[in-house]
Image 1 (cartoon, rainbow, N blue to C red):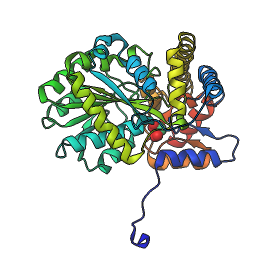
Image 2: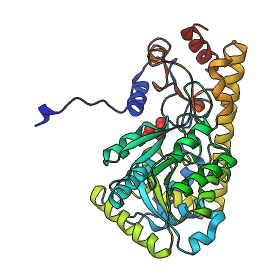
Image 3: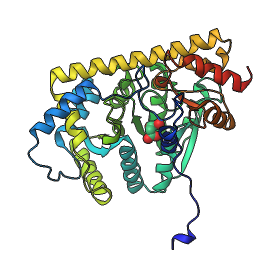
Image 4: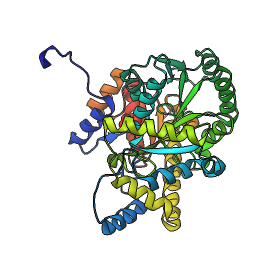
Amino acid sequence: MFESLEMTHPDPILTLSEHFMSDTNPRKIDLGIGLYKDKNGNTPVMESVRIAESSIVDRAVDKVYKGSSGLDGFCDVISWLLFRARSNLIEYGRVLSIQTIGGTGAIRLAAEFLKQINPKKGVWVSDPTWGNHIDIFSHVGMQVSYYPYQEIGGDLNFPVMLESIRKIPEGDVVVLHGCGHNPTGFDLSKYQWGAVLEVVKERGLFPVIDMAYHGLANDLCDDVYCVELFSDHLDEMLVAYSCSKSFGLYRDRVGALVVLGKSRDSCVKAKLHLARLARVSISSPAIHGALIVSEILSSPDLKRMWVGELNLMSIKIKAARKVLINEARMQGCDDTFRNVCSGVGLFSLIPVGREDVGMLREVFCIYMLDSGRINLSGVNNNNVGYVVSSIKTLLGK
Ligand code: LMR
């Protein structure tokens, strides 16, 4: 049976990360997978996470199953983290969360749910977007189409994006990046979010907001602007929340799918359906990481500590953008890095071709995605000169 299988390609992001880890060259630099890195290029366990983890391990009395929707306490703290400024929605029962296997699991659950409710509807993602969006929605059988976002090597093309969203068939699903757009780093301004909301309302589109970088674009409040705005004006939407980056819990696989519904009843129904879907795929999610997150968010001291750590990470990413652009200016190739100035969050796209990316990896041991996406937190004072000069040499600038 397996002989008849067609060859398929391994996942480009995870494979690149594996290649990086097995590279023995001490000069290697990882600008690939979306991991936050400190000034030494490491991804340490956050101190708040370490304290919360040791406390839950000490207190553990059993490891029995939880239900398909995960840990209730975790679901509640995530709803509050996102909707703190709209607490009335939580009190009315219009917001409910279900625990998922990271943000990816949340997107997957959303896709299965939306396909089940309305099998004929298509889904629209930004061009470019995180590659797994396309794979996940296609995998559940949804037709995936694109709305333009960034022109190659250029800026966010908002007028064209908006016009394209205006032409989306009524009732289709539109995926929006809540903050820290992956891969461009270009986020919408408040005014632009308002304009998108108007079109979403006009066309009756169903928004799925991917919130994978909460707190890392600007801060915890600013980064949920679109969630708050949309929830003020829409009856329904889904938010896919990841704890991978904001809590550094990458391999613990913690996330949530947050449902905004019209009424308490409709939210309860939606959550039951989501739990059914979870039951037939994962049965119930792993609880360890969810316990850590709920421990942090329900303890004022730990929460304060976590917010402080997250803010420092966000500041460090902004500083890395400056370091890179200053170095590029000094080396006279700032044009190549001009998107870095205007972006936020972990990522930027630099105008290099697939072959250039291969050369950078083979010759200079600098790892980035084939699209030219770089993870800014991988750039630091020690490696910035080498990163810029290698790219400059390669592009012959
Ligand atoms: C990324 O875009 O690098 C991250 O979201 C990791 C992943 O799962 O792709």
